[in-house]
Amino acid sequence: MSRVLIRGGRVLDPANDHDAVADVLIEEDRVLEVGPDLSAENAEVVEAAGKWVAPGFVDLHVHLREPGLEYKEDLASGGRAAVAGGFTSICCMANTDPVNDDPSVTKYILDRAAKDSPARIFPIAAATRRLAGEVMTEMSALKDAGAVAFSDDGETIMDAAVMRSVLEYSKLVDAPVVIHAEDCGLRADGVVNEGRMSTRLGLPGNPVEAEEIHVARDIRLARLTGARLHVGHVSSGGSVGLIRQAKEEGLSVTAEVTPHHLSLTEEVTEGFDTSTKMAPPLRTQGDVETLRKALADGVIDCVATDHAPHATYEKDVEFTAAPCGVLGLETAFGVVNDMVRQGEISPLELMRRMSTTPARIFGLEGGSLSSGSVADLVLLDPETVWVYDPTEGFSKSRNSPWGGSELTGQVFATFVAGRLVYQAGRGVLVR
Ligand code: DOR
Ligand code: ZN
Image 1 (spheres, rainbow, N blue to C red):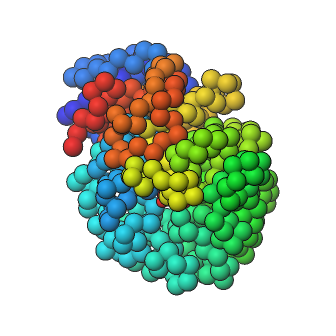
Image 2: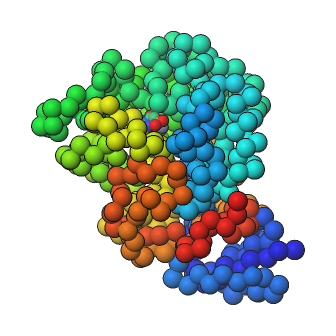
């Protein structure tokens, strides 16, 4: 019987409102006990003094590019980037080639992930065929194949009647629907936030209204249908007010925010660096402040990276021609830990937003250190200062806006199902 004792760390277990120095004893793939001075008998000991010990991070929004676009990322490299970033479970979007709109694709992803990835991978299936926003997918068959949620992410479902049907059927299969809220007409060929920077740089703008109109529409459709609506990558402060109202009304509406929308503004696009181009775009300082407050007070439920790898040759083109998206998995904690350092959120609540709450939204195991729960854990060095170099990362791609940036807070170790799968300085230890 394999036993691991993680000794003397600051154990942050949001599921049990636990924030105190303690030991964590793991047996096989489960947490056996959390408490002071546990016996190390027959256990391998990991000294964790000065570190945070938390349930592994759960990311509801990543792009892993397999099948079809493996030159950007695959389930193996994405899974390695995940555990290096402290993520033990990641949920991959359907905009692969072929699109994950058929149970055969869902099963393929799960089979390959089980063989190739040190992180748990959960497929999100398309809501409409080929992400075209016209004909619904076979949600029940996709759910049976292992899909945990439905989304056309990358594309917006423009037809409200189609969206209504998607929400109605999602209720029947009891799965959440993740929206990519960007009105195609208003967004047009916009590549940066519409406002000061789009004017200054002479780039086509994408207004916050493109997002807010769809957040408002889909909240109303969630009210009409009673379905579980999850708002992907909120970028606009205006969306936060709509989500707050929906929650006050008691609707089943949840929301996520990315590390980039929490920390960067449109100003970083000054130098036309295509690693600052993503959809939705970076907004203003006011939006960033509203998003940070919303994450702290829980109106925005969780952090999701929207990890979106693209090859260097694809990004090394003029700004308007580059694909949207930035890496997120390996820098997420170092970026959002700034909120703890600035006193905007407690360590326990940050862990809740990165682990316990996202696990609950999709109904995944994890997010808890209760005895008997899966032994998915992350150990963090909250004070360690490091410089991120994407060329040394585990992702196949390099398109990060934080390349060369100093971040404070580093992943020390990651356990999946009781196995040490990543350790700082040693790298990914399995597969
Ligand atoms: O920036 C983005 N990149 N936003 C999306 O919605 C899609 C994603 C991608 O697939 O690259
Ligand atoms: Zn996405």
